[in-house]
Amino acid sequence: MSAKRDYYEVLGVTKSSNPDEIKSQYRKLALKFHPDRNKSPDAQEHFKEISEAYAVLSDSSKRDLYDQHGHEGVDGRYSTEDIFRGAGGNFNDIFNDLFSGQGGRGGGGFGSVFENLFGGGGGFGRSRGNDLLHECYITLEDVLHGKQIELDLQKYVDCPDCSGTGCKPGTSKATCKDCNGRGQVRVRKNMGGFLLETAQACRTCRGRGEIIKDPCRKCQRGKIKGTKHLSFNLPSGIDNGDYVIQGEGESIPEGNNGDLIVRVRVEPHSHFRRDGIDLYCDAKLSMIDASLGTEINVKTLEKTETLKIESGTQPNSILKIKSQGLPSQNSNRRGDLFVHVVVEIPKKLSKQQKSLLDEFRKSD
Image (tube, rainbow, N blue to C red; front, side, top):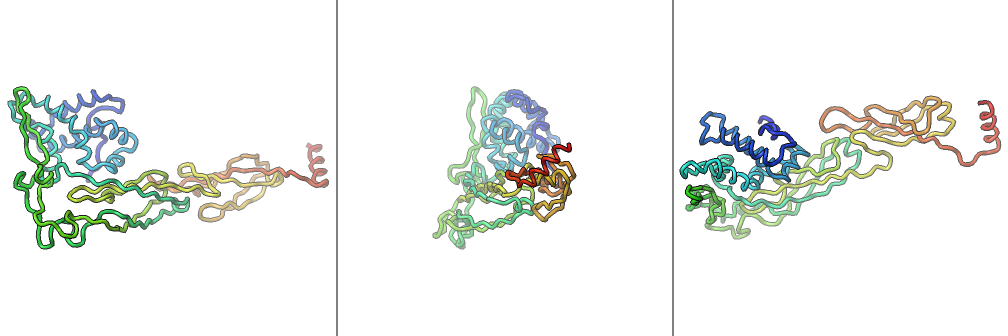
C-alpha cells in the first residue's frame, strides 16, 4: 500500500489556510474529479483522496490532531467511517450547491459520496465501541531494550456459543428486505424546486444490512462479558504518551470495535535524567582529583565505562560518553550519556590539610 500524501498537499492549501479557503479549494477539486462528471479511470481515487483530506481539515479537532501527529495520529484515533461521519454537514453544504442545478439527478449528494468511498453495502451508520485505557509504567531500562506487555482486558468478547454472530447455533442472519442488504435507503427531498437524494441508515436493520431471526439464547446479540488476553511489544526508544492499538477496545454487537489506548509513563530513574534520547548523570569528584586529573568509573544503563578526568577540570563541566544514551524510534541512532562533574569541597579539614592548602595558596 502506498503511503498517504500530505492532506494539505492533496488539496493544494497550506497550514495557514483558513476554513473558508480550504472549503473553496475542495469545491473546485470536487467539481473536477466527481465521478459523475469525470469519467477518467483515476477520477474516483482522486475524489476519495481529496474528500478524505477535506473531511479531516474541515474539522478543527481532527485538523489539530493531524497537525501534531500527521496521518498516524488521525488513523490511530478514528476509523474511516468516523472521519466522514463527523464531516457530513460540511459535505452536504458543498454538494447541495454544486449539484443544485442538475434537474433532480441527485447523484452528487453526500449520501452518494459516502457510498462511493465505502463501496456501499452494510455497515452504514454502524455504531462504535468505547475506547479502553490502560496505563503502563516502564523504566529507562525498558526504554533501552523495549518491553513485552501481557494484559488481560475485561471487556465484551464474542459469545462462544454463536461465535459472535448473535444467531442461534445452526442458523444465520437474513438479508434485510427493506434495504436489500445495503444497510441504507435512498430518500428524496424537494429542496426549492430540485430533488436532493441522500442516503440514510435503514431503520429495519439499523444500518447493518442483515437481521437476526433466531437470536442466540446465551447472548442474544453476539457479545458477552469476558476476558481477552493481549500481548504486545513496546518498542525501544518509546517516550511518554498515548499509543493506540486499533480494534482492541470495547466490542459491541453489530458495530465497530473501539481502540485500546496504551498510556505510557516512564518512571523517574534514581541515577539518570532523560532528555529525548540523551541521558544525564552526576559524577562527584574531590577537588584534588579535579585539579590533578584521574580516571573514574561511570555507570551506564548497560555497563560501567571508564572516563578520563583531565587535570584542571572545572566544577559543572559536562563530559560526554558517546552512544550510551537511549535509542531513537525513528532511526538507528543512539543518544549520548552526558556526565555532569560535581566537585566536592570538604567541610572539615585537619590542621595538616589546612597547612598544605595554605602553602598551595601562597605558592600561586
